[in-house]
Length: 166
Length: 452
Image (cartoon, rainbow over all chains, first blue to last red; front, side):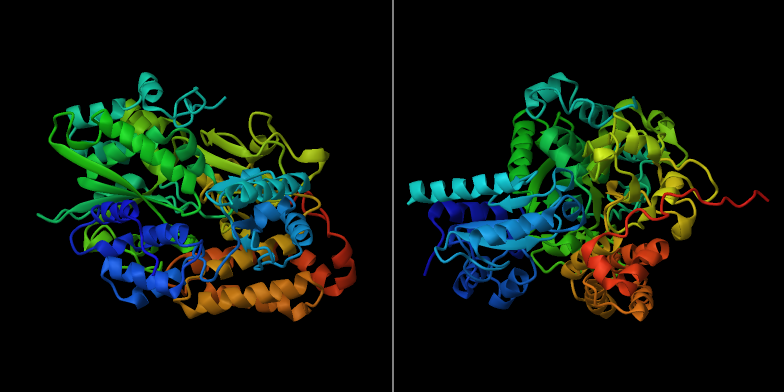
């Protein structure tokens, strides 16, 4: 079973130390973020059970949190996840067209992953970039003022990175 | 040019770093508060300032602080609400991203006033890169003696931690936020008890918005009375407005609440007007949950007075003809936008974000989205409009937390002011698939009732 490295375990303990004794469950959301980053971009039942054992809580306490928050992926995703905002302010600035364009370009529907496992397309609700619409989240950062040309460039950038990282 | 208290230095090169921030006068308020004032005196200044919570509810911040229970031997906590998620709102992000030390400084002063030795910034999970910026600022502040043990030799200890959420609008509601901080689902708690008595880990807790806590810095520097002189009436100080939608200059603006809505939209100092010379159709001035107003009611109140960018004027006329300042998320719709489609995106948002605890919200938000989808895609019936009205009324006021109201209000206001646009969608579904209803009469001057 996959486990955190010593360095990541230190990070977990550092987070737990912020809270009063016995309140280590408070670390659950940050530790699930760490686990998702470390173990392939999603949370398997095995990963969640591991997190439960680290925090000395019941597995169900992890499942109910993992299923509540939208940033946790409960099934495998592509190497690059496009999370495109579709809420009011982005819609006013053409997010519907951007989503259609990505669907066409990648040949997938919302929620799907390309056959080569590189790209997943998700729609998300307001990410707080309304003044820089339309936008999407890609990994840790936002890509803003999206146009079709920018989407082309982002896809190329991801494909290039995938080659150099392999 | 209005007075700036928060963003005045935001564009100084390098202001994100401690050295530049300090050189520009940063952390003076901490010196003043910790060395020359008691915690109660700090709270008193905040009370005098008239500062209202900047997250959306507008509750007086000093009063909130004074409710904090102080039993002996029990820790107290300050939690900064950085879960900014209300559509149209991106002001806290701007503040944290560009001038993070201002928030850290405000947190130190507020923690001193409230007696919090451990303060948490709960930030929405998607703002992942801002966590790094804040943690860097916190580390710099600590290295320079503004955090840690015995700060400035006063005996006051403080640590600040940043904790990320994981994608849930509801965690902006303060009790849901506390649940989330405790590692649980973001289900709002039943109140009372209020967090001021039983909050984080059952200890007395104050939860304040980022902008509210940043505003503590100028309040301490210039004094509560001076701060209260800026603005008008109960809208004291300055307010950050995040402007978006169909405008030439979207962005975050600091206003002193004495300018008119018209000036804010059309002046080059602010939004710079509407692109391509299009006309204004509607606007949601305070984040997606506050009532949308057609152009004519937005620019002038029902009494025929110029509508101003402050708490009182925006809510003039109640929900019948007014709206709210809310979070300051200012969303502009031009004449080519469809109010039905826009309302549908908001209904979808609230359905997605309902925590599911209360039936009226869990079920009602889903129904509203479905019915709006039918209307938007040419499958609506005329009775659907009344049904929508009925559903929103049954959600409002019948839920544990204000998400129910937040979901009901946009639908109610859209029907209240744009009913003929909804009816047009139902009566002419084919036309509605091909073109928009347009500006119609929404910018026409309204008859003003004679003064009695």
